[in-house]
Image (cartoon, rainbow, N blue to C red; front, side, top):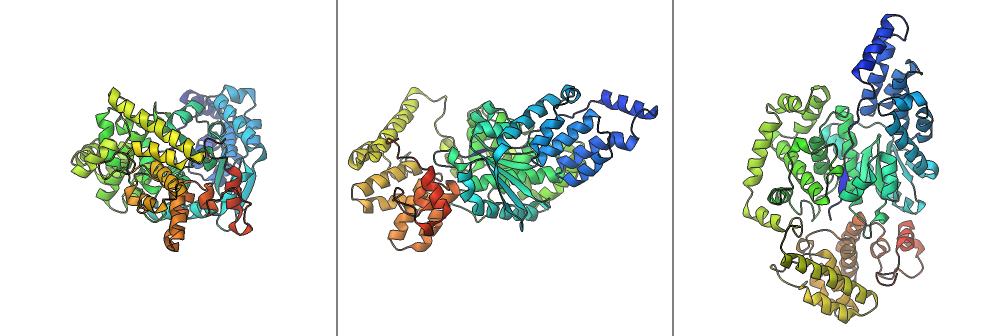
Length: 533
C-alpha cells in the first residue's frame, strides 16, 4: 500500500478584524503601544509561516507582552522550536485561552509536552540536522536519516530554489497517538487515511518504521514532508492544498536515483479509475487536508490527481515553472491570481487542459487503471469472494510456513496461481511471490523459486521481505552488486527487516558485532514469525 502522507493544515487567524479595530483605536487615544508594536504579531506570524524564526522573535521583542495576540504568536514560535514546555506555560493564561485558537493551541502544546518529555536527540552539526526519538531503539536509523534529509534538501533547493533555515528538525514517534499529539491532526483522521508523517510546526514528525509490520517507504516519506516545509517557506504558507501535495508527491523521489516502483501504478491510471468509481474531487475542493478525507481510497485518488496535475503543469511550463509559481503565491491574493501571473491561465483553464491530457491516455495506462486500486468495494459477490479466498489462503500459507510445513504452504499458494503468466492476477504480488519462494526454499526446491525474485519489473509494488530474500539469493549466486542493491531497497522500505539489516536469514542467532547497530536493532524489534507469536 502506498504510504499515505499529509500536508500542513491551514491555520485560522488568531485575531479578527474587530479586535484589530479596537487595538488601533486604543493606539489613537494614546492608551496602548505604538502602531508598529500593534502590528508586530501579524508580522511575526508571517515570519513564523516562512520559518524565519529569528525575525519573528525580533518582531515580538518590541510588542506588548500582555497582548493575547502576542502571547499566541510567542507560543506558536515556541512550538515551532520544540519548546513545548514554554508554549504550554504561555497558553495556560485564562485570557489567552479565550482568544481564537487559544484553547486548541493549548491542547496541542500539552500533547507535544507529553511526547517530548524524554526524547533522545542526535545532531549532525555540520549539516544542520536535528533528530529526536521517542524510542531509543530507532536511533540506529540516524546515519541513513541524516543522509536522506541532506540529499532531499539539496534536491529541493535545486528544483524549487528554496533556502533552508537551520537546523532541520525531525521527530520520530512510536504510534499514531503520539503523532496526533505532536501535530494536532485528529487521531481518527490519521487512522482512516493511514497517515505516516506530518510536516507542521516547522518540523517533520514521522512514525517509526517499526509501527508497521513491514515498514513503509520512510525515506521517500521524509523527502515528501520536507517538500511541504520548503513550499511553506517559499510561500509563507499561502500555497493551496493541491499545489502543496502535488509538488510534494513530485519531489518525494527526485532526491534519489529512479527506482523500479516509481509511478507504479501511474498517477493517470489512478485518476481514471478514481473517476470510474466516483471517488475523484475537484482540485480546489480537497478540503483542509488529504489526511482528513473519508477513506484511504479517496486519499489515494486525491494524491494521484494532484501528482498528475502538477507534473503536467511543470512539464508544460519548463524547469522554472514551479519556482515562479511559488514566488507568485507569496504575493498574490489567491491561487488563481498566482497561476495567472505565472503562466497566463487560471486553475480552471489548466484543469481543462490537464483532464484532456489524462483522458487521452494510451491503452497501457487505461489497462493499468483496472488494477490500480485493488478490488472495487462496489464489485459483485464473485469479486469479493475471490479476494476473500486470496486473503484466507495466503494467511494459512503464512501460518504453515512459520510452523515449518513448506509443502503444505505451497499447496495453498498453488491454488492462488501465484506462478501464473502475464494473465495471472496475482503473479505480480510481491508478498505472495516472497512467500512462495520461501516455501520452495524450505522444501529444498530453491531453483524453482529463482524466477520469483529475478526481476523487479515482474512485481507490482515494493515489499521489504521480497527485496531481502532477493539480496540473499543473489549473494549465494555470486552477484554481489545485485545483492547490495536489493538489501538497500529492502532497508529503504523497512530498515528493521532482519534479513536485510543483518544480511542473513538466521535472525535468531547472536548479533555479529561487524553487522552494526541497525542489525542489533532489527533483531531486537523483530518478533517471532507469524503463527509463533
